[in-house]
Image 1 (cartoon, one colour):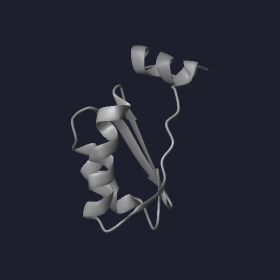
Image 2 (cartoon, helix red, strand yellow):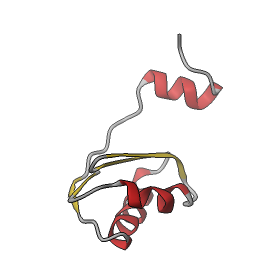
Image 3 (cartoon, helix red, strand yellow):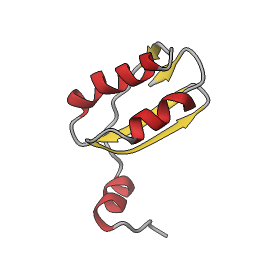
Image 4 (tube, one colour):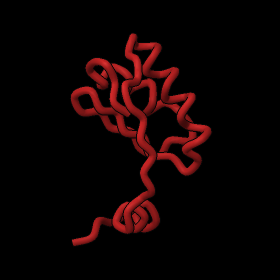
Length: 78
């Protein structure tokens, strides 16, 4: 999700939410990883709004093979 300002303030809210396996923030971009994206989107939007940010763009992308491997094994590919 691309926000209208710095995304980092929303990160602690996302990290405390059940259903999200991982969340990251970089500049105005917020990334959240969830098994059920449809249920996660409203929660992520509320977290952004709670810190005074509005979404500019929302993108859903399927996980890569590497992401699936790491999530299943806990190990990175080398």
